[in-house]
Length: 112
Image 1 (cartoon, rainbow, N blue to C red):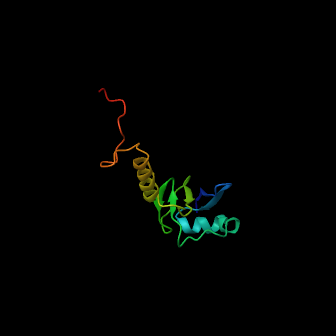
Image 2: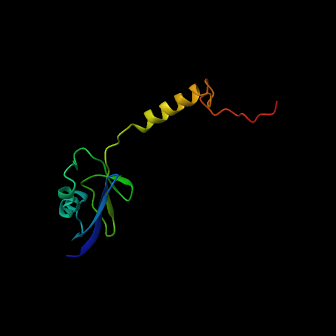
Image 3: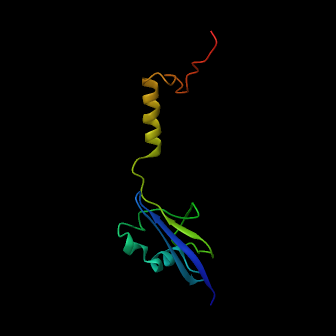
């Protein structure tokens, strides 16, 4: 049975861990995560809730891993990115930095 090497990565704002695992070819993402024991370092990891990726591409727990893959466990978002952009655009309109109708930037360098 041939073995492959795979990494499991998880990061918090103040620290990160990358655990290298040797596992039999044909293993799934979930099997690698369990073998890495990363959930003992970070008990807040909930594989039923958090998204998982392999090299920044969303993956499923049942996906088969390949030699050299990096499995990434993503933290839940603190704020919805769309909502943050919407608030920033509203603030720019109120401050006169954006057009009130289109929301686009004002061109203050127009020749008069």
